[in-house]
Length: 85
Image (cartoon, rainbow, N blue to C red):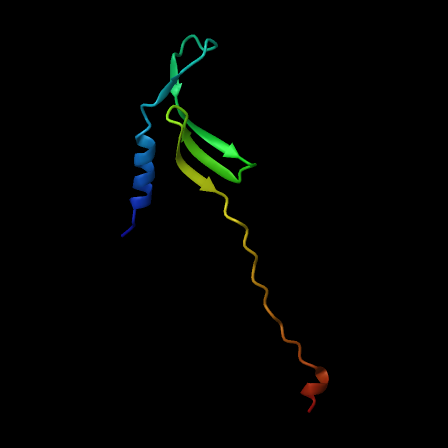
C-alpha cells in the first residue's frame, strides 16, 4: 500500500491559498484579478518555492540537494615479486 500523506499535505497547503488573488494593474483591462500563487526561483535554482504573494507565505519550499561524492574504491595492487614466492 502506498503512503500518500505527503502528497495530500502538499495538495492541502496549495488548496488553502486557491482563493488568494491580487489586483491586476492597468495594463490588463480585461482582467481585474489574478492568482496570488507564484513559483519563485532563487540563486540559480538552488532554492525554488511556491509562494502566496497575498499572504506573504511560502507554501512549499524545495532546496537543491548538495552533491554527494561517489565513494572511492581502494584497489590493492600486489607486487609481482611477492606472487612468485
